[in-house]
Length: 168
Image (cartoon, one colour):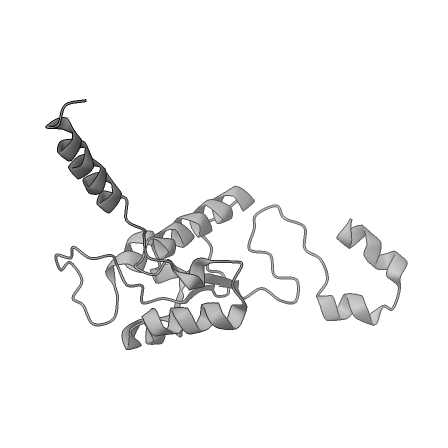
C-alpha cells in the first residue's frame, strides 16, 4: 500500500465511524427497564400539551386516523409541519351505538382500531392509545357476535359449571 493511500484510508475509516454514531437511547421504549424508570423518562420528554392530550378522550364518531394526526394541541390544523406529529388524544371511546359501520363485523372493528393505533404510534413519542367501548349489560356492538350475560350476573350464579362454556 502506498504512502498516499494510508492517510486516505484513515480518513475514510474516521468518516465511516462518525457516520455510524450511536442513536439516542430511549429508556421509555426499553421493556427491560423498570416501569418507574420508563415513566420518568417519558414524562421528561413530554411537553405540557402532550400531557394534556394524553388525558383527552374523544368519541369514535369524530375520530379518524387523520384527525389523530392533524388535530393536536397548540397547532393549527393544516399547518405545514416538518417535525413529527403530537397527538391530542390519549384514548377513544365508542359510546352507545358508536360503531365503525352499520352491521360491522369483528374484522371491521379490528381494522378500524388498528388504523387508529397506527396513527397514534406515528406521533412524535409513539404512545399507543387506549380504546374503550361502552358495552355493559349485554351490549352487542359487533354484528352476529354472541351476547353473554353481564359479568356480575355470571358471578352471582356461583355455579362454575355454568360459566365454563363462556370461557372455553
